[in-house]
Length: 159
Image 1 (spheres, rainbow, N blue to C red):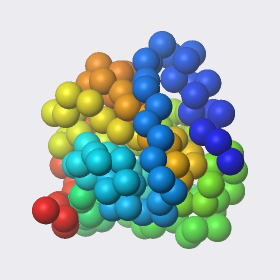
Image 2 (image 1 turned 180 degrees about the vertical axis):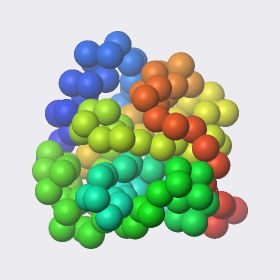
Image 3 (image 1 turned 30 degrees about the vertical axis):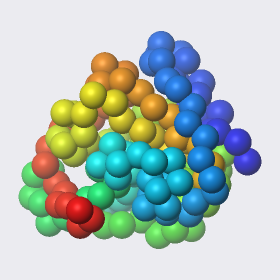
């Protein structure tokens, strides 16, 4: 499978410039960072959540961080939980399993973005396969995250 068609169409339609960064096949953020020689803190990852009303939410955070559901739920006054893998795969049918692009608007989902990503000069995004990242500038990332709430809901796990 190649780069997500929904993602590239969204980026082009919204005039968000990006560069493709190819890397050796990797099934994890750590592996991607190593094979592409990019810092984990510059790679944005997506975590898919839903609440008791089945409302979906994409949480976008640095790859070297872990989501704090309690912090997120406190900030949003919600009760979000991790989505089951089977549900995630149905939403992202144009992507390889486990290669979810952190671009909620491209998939008509609500989002929340960790504030730590807002401070980066460039951000790398999973592109929907396990061999490509997309690099966007700070301006491009801000455009991509414009519809989401920006809060602090994660903590660093890798140094």
